[in-house]
Length: 176
Image (cartoon, rainbow, N blue to C red; front, side):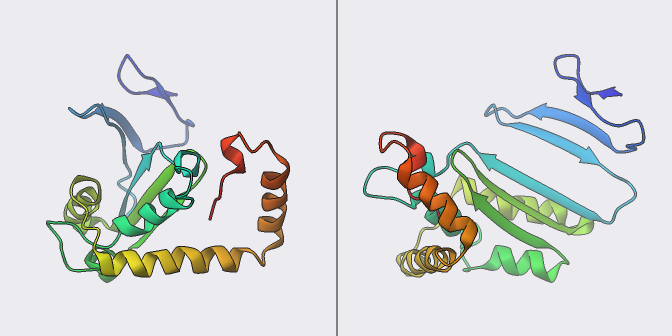
């Protein structure tokens, strides 16, 4: 079954009762809206097409570090960790991850609080506060996360693959 505007067809299983709509915002960002009247939860995600392949030489881990930093505060919501607290207090979950070419931020929350959650979430990308206190803590957090991953067999195999690939390829770069 196809759903959507004539310029984009969204395919879904026949048994999927949800409604889908694609919109393009004035700043050219695209959004996929999904409505499911059977749930009391709401969710959102933002994918930024920048990952560790874009880290400049000498600033390895920058994309992952910025993923962490955006969660702290914004000009509109300057209290540190207020976003995470708001999401948790209203039955939700939030997280993010950085890959080679993407950084994805996401959350879910009780549906009644979606509007405020979206406003808080959007402020990450509009006016983040990158305080020096948070910067120092997050440098340590990313480093700690990396050190913890060194003990993982999967991460060791990944590091071996990175080590033997061409130093000129972005895959060779650090990833946390």
